[in-house]
Length: 83
Image 1 (cartoon, rainbow, N blue to C red):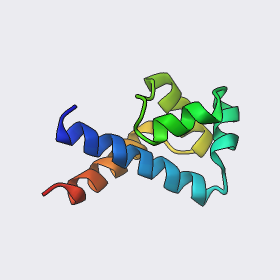
Image 2: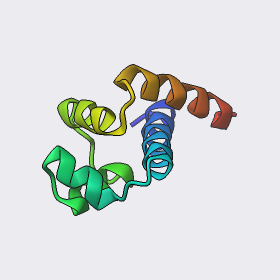
Image 3: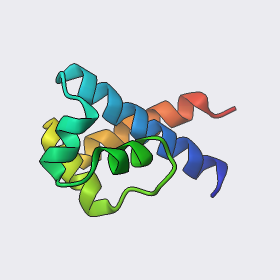
């Protein structure tokens, strides 16, 4: 995985986590709404496993944001962390 890809995975996870906190949702809440185990969501958000696109779209829907908005915010975040 390239540095850019690693930065984007971390940034997408950070944006999703911030949205969860902002909505008062736990990983368990989001996982149940999406239909996956909490441990699986944890692996996705921890960068240990790649999140399928369909799951990403479902997570965005649960959080009430568009996948594009998550990606835009992640891109901004990744750019700030790149040397």
